[in-house]
Amino acid sequence: AFQPLDQFQLLYGSRQDKAMRAVHVTIPKKPKSAAQPIGAVSALVTSFVSAVLKKGTAKPDVRDGLRVEELLDAARRSHAASGQAIFL
Image (cartoon, rainbow, N blue to C red; front, side, top):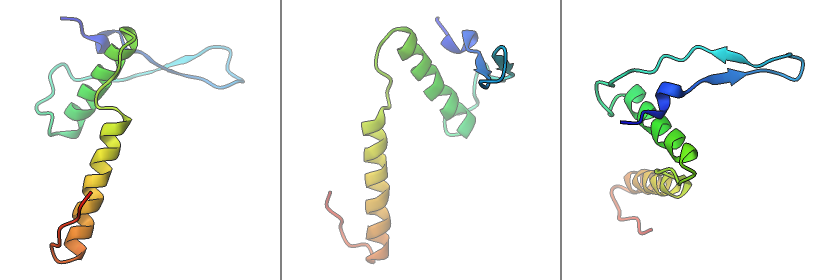
């Protein structure tokens, strides 16, 4: 199976630097659970890098993120209103 993170290299530099420098990144081979932050981030980065390499579209995308924020906001407003329904 193609694993884009196996070829991932993070570089950084500034205008004054003569060359880019590598940042050491430890990527877990198999996260214990996607519920753990490193597992979730690893899965998102894998999806993103794969989409870039294949010139495709990554999921989740900005629309998905916006929907999550809308739902979280509605949950907060509902809680503040003693459980009243919030219609989106």
